[in-house]
Image (tube, rainbow, N blue to C red):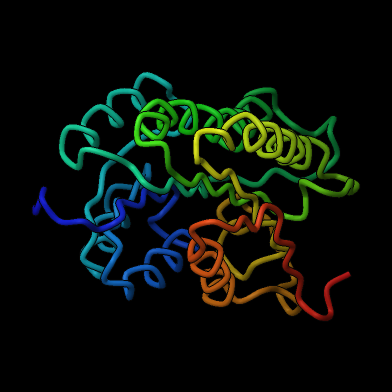
Length: 234
């Protein structure tokens, strides 16, 4: 582990598989980036990290104590965090009266509170360096309402407001808070939730990851809200 290099330290949550993994693959091609991958799935996380030459750490994004402890370790090991990509998320769909309360709680804890917790944890270091980027992977669910997605969409709408408000709060410190809003992506998000879904009009995660890299490529310009849709997506 080289503590003296000048690479940008980029933390990616939910990085074991799906879009998070594709983001790691895409960013690993940039020699100016040092990747630090975070996930709850230790086995898949290790495989992904080893495949792209990244550091990796196990963490539950819904647990603020784990997050605080992890950020302390990262700052001790890497001195600063330049970019946080909040990508971890879970899906919940169906009539609201079919949801068990624990699933509602989990959805909000991971999608909403996890993003808020991680952001809150990295901000002091970014403020001290007067620079940083927080990029929240939100989804078009954070911009629209949809039947049988009330809790999921609410968890994403909350992050839309959080992203815009935090960007206004931190812009004077040289910190950008950005949101990317992809429509349906061809990952296992639905499958992991036990939901069958037609993926014929879905986005390729490797294409979405290219946009993420592009959003990170500017020093003095913000792409604060980027919406991505398949050309046939309704």
